[in-house]
Amino acid sequence: MSLGATELILILVIVFVIFGAGKLPQVMKDVGKSVKNLKDGLKEEGKKQGIKKPEVKKSGVKKQNITKSRKSKSIKPKNKA
Image (cartoon, rainbow, N blue to C red; front, side, top):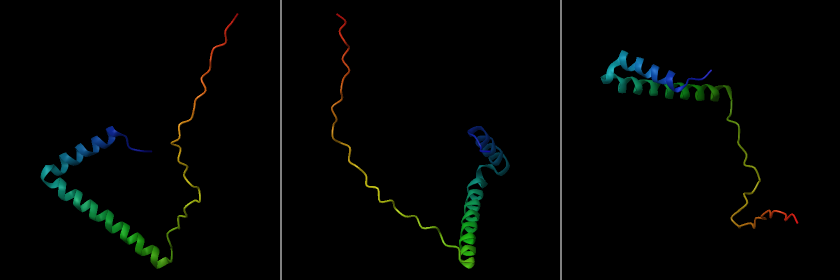
């Protein structure tokens, strides 16, 4: 279940009405701090339990430079004679 554009707009309008234009920046700042504290707490808890981030290995696949022009074969119509 995901939120669409209309649902997000409705939520923003309700928040704007409840908090008003003056308090909205402070509310968003507090929400940002809360999210940061939550992430920091999760990282700290993971370190206590010995959970490590999974390592992402780069694949050995090399990118090919495909800038050379290729001659396209045009299909010629057959003459009916």
